[in-house]
Image 1 (cartoon, rainbow, N blue to C red):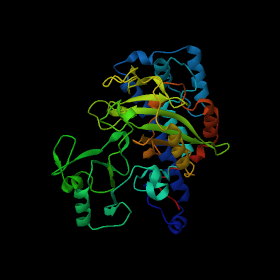
Image 2: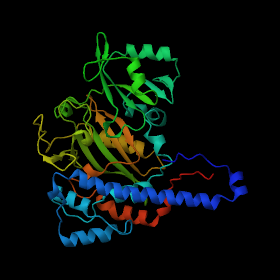
Image 3: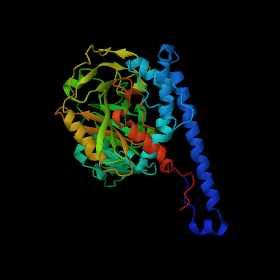
Image 4: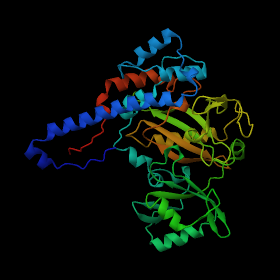
Length: 396
């Protein structure tokens, strides 16, 4: 991200560095874009190394149209993502969004990444938005400072006491950078304190050793009983992508999927073995869910619960919550929410994803990610390359 230290205007003027520093930023942006393309082209091949059939060519005319369609954003369009999505879904559509193009030329232009870290910080949610929409936080650490649930700084000794006195199961997460379920710890409350997923005692020293700073401690969300039927070991969340139109500023949902974990998993991420199933506009699930490598399942492979026709409890409230928050974030037009539905059918936003958002599992059913909005988004991004505002060095 934009970690460069601002360079004083006076010094820049004296040394005549402004043009040179702009060149540094230009080169940095180009390097990041090129690296993104290379990285994601390698990713699709590695991901499907065991199932090459999903990279089989589709109709030649569709592949040509696909390349021409995305050429305003990338001169050399790799057909691998088109082939993968088409072969899994059975829908060959030239508007499928290749992951490398999404990261290189769409996300970076629709979202001002200077703000991405702010809105991705779980420690900021309850200060920026309606706290009732979010997973509750009981204790937190911000840059090494210990705080209670109301953001009041407290001594370390008080934090330790409050932590050991928490009365229920809880989860510990990094407040920034827990994508893919990384470094998330689920703790069970026992008579003698907390125990981790392996049954080992977990005390403040363990917390301090593993996290040190920038984390949240939250009670485990008691998910709706119907969602728990897929997999009771994980909180099965909805990934909802929202878009604020460049034409009329209206916030709309573009795609939603239900993510379910596998047996004994505490997270529902595909990268950790989970499944994703398209949520249709009426709130019911599609006929199959997919794994990261495109394997299709009509029923959950562990619980046997069928996907097709399952109705998401409180789905309209989920969309309302995502719309309310997305409408309050002017610098970012594209936000992806991870939302749980609690036992009373209330939405609880677990995470706001603002950058490096995974779109793979959003296009394995139902056609292209942006649907009828694809032309609008592609054309605007092609016309506004200057909206990639990343700066390796802040000129001031």
